[in-house]
Image (cartoon, rainbow, N blue to C red; front, side, top):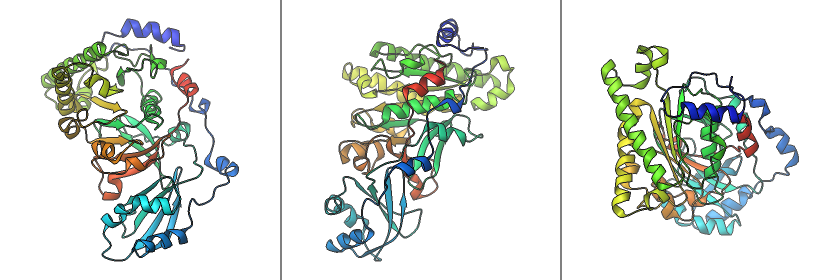
Length: 402
């Protein structure tokens, strides 16, 4: 049984270059060892008050010629959502036009307007709380869905509901957020979610870490398909490997006359089953801008090829960047990566690049996120505000067995 980081490093080195070679037993960490406390315990210590008075909201709306009544409010982890009934015929554009003025008059640092609250006729105004509750990764693990093949704990939405996604249904994701937004912690929760629920026989990682320190804790875990890449040349090698592996898997599926990885794995002996693969590229903009324009086109073509085809063979990609430039998140890349996780960004222009609409510029940082769900059935669910869970360095050490 693999227990220590050193033992995992040795085993990882031996198995690294043989896809699907790991056949040991992965020792899952005990969730009870992770840090965390209940929301009830936090509320006892926090002297929580509504960030603004509902009567003040009605008064300020009237000041700008908008007739509205606050019907209810919901206290979330980072924001309080005020549900407002506005006069029939009120244009949402009018509210958006005065968003910054409303925030100023209400003396709140962050304000966001929601088109509809849970598909009702009410609109929502989200106001940042003076104090926020911490969402702990440990608490989300307890309710992790059992029917997902690649489950990821996304966090808690503004109504207090835990949110999870299945990466196999996503199937690829763009992530953006400036320094301090919680983007890097979120990427660690993606990895942590899979390390806590899946063995190396079930999922493997390819990771590009230009910072060289963000994912260093995972070096040596048997889930790594290849060593973590830290420079553009190594990143290109991983991209080439992912494309070659995708083509190899398609050949295997074709020989078995099946269309999806899950069907292939049911038709072959256990030793021949293929694990899912999650390819995480942090600071994707660095990779795109590290060489000439021709180099960036080569990177784009490989990423698009993976995004277009790799889902069927169980390869899923997550691209993350601090600055969502249109020259980096090109229309071709965005068209093939429908899931988006936007953390706080500096402007509405950046928000539109990642989400195709405003909103991320009004986020409060520290894991406050807007998630665009490509599988949503309603307008309310299409973009949800979520507080991503906190995962400390000590928790990561526990997860990897350090």
